[in-house]
Length: 395
Image (cartoon, rainbow, N blue to C red; front, side, top):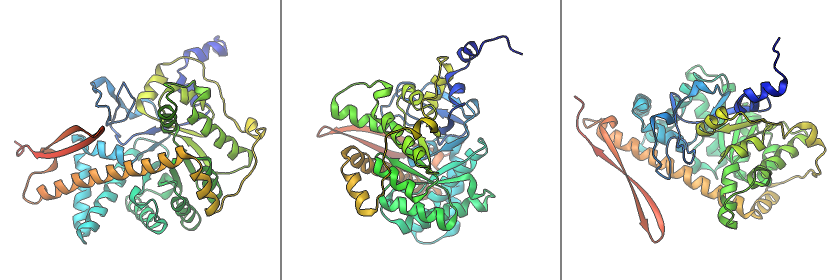
């Protein structure tokens, strides 16, 4: 038996290992071999601030042993540019060409296959589930979201992966939430409702009985910092932390089965302030910080305390949902902004694939194309361009 006191053992344990006692830790990545994370801003794979990435920023996925993993179009776009994953791009393109159809159908089939291919590789590294996202451009079309989700599930099934290991990510629009409800009720497909910023969205998701929601802690903080001019918030005052805490307490107080997975963290203080939340999806950079931190982690969220919270149960039909969500300016702006950004990255990925298709038929393959990135300022807006430049044949 160890002679160390419980307090001393806690001090020896990393904050990450302590956190895992209260919360399921999920990896937020599209890179299953190594994570590339900006040490300045903690953005995965592709840093919008163009911070320098060193070899020490490549972190093995096995090192932190996450239970589950999430992906999104931005992460897949960045990972698809890496030489290590060109075989997945090639496989997806071959699949799309074999399936045939119109140019748009071919491109859609390639994109779906590519997302599933990344998911399959990630599943080899984790014991739990991977989240695969439906095209954000379908966010306001319930039927198309359902159809696309079932197609993704079918692609996984062909590869021998049961739907129990998959979470389908859908935007938390009214249409997305209803798509999630139909997928859960009629098809037994588990859904992860993403881009969730308002309490109204959370209530509607709970009433739809979806498996999981992903409220975006950091993006909420971003909005308040920009709107108020405050440069920083203490963790217990952080608007994103307060939002997720309220949602968690509401779900536990009224016995909803939907689980809460806090997402989009900007610092470890936010993560620690939500210790006890059902799940937390954390970027590799913050996982590294937590693994090096030996401070004490306390359980701040739990079902017992939630039962004592002063919250009233509410019901939201479509009209009430749209009104309540509309009343939250932050949520309206961040939801639409998130959809636009994910859609834009999907378009960028499609452009990459089109270049590959154009050069693949008697031309140059994608691995011999240099991607040039240009950042230009126009009327106080920063515009991001990318150009494909063939660099010659392989030796």
